[in-house]
Image (cartoon, rainbow, N blue to C red; front, side, top):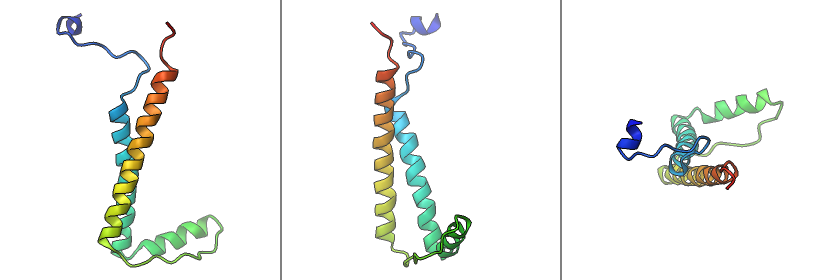
Length: 102
């Protein structure tokens, strides 16, 4: 009742915010790649990668290169923007598929 008095509209049940969903997925993907870049910068990335491959019964064949700040920034930015786009697209699709029939 008070939300109607204040002029606030309640969201339809089942709808999700496009911008918020994009931000959440963008931050998740960008954040995980930021952690990876920090792991590379610390020098522990090769050890972690070898261990993960070993757990999956894969012989490690990849070598981690040295840290480059510009490359790391590009990685984090690209994955953040991509995550935002995927999250926003998902929210738009979700809202369209769950919209009440008229």
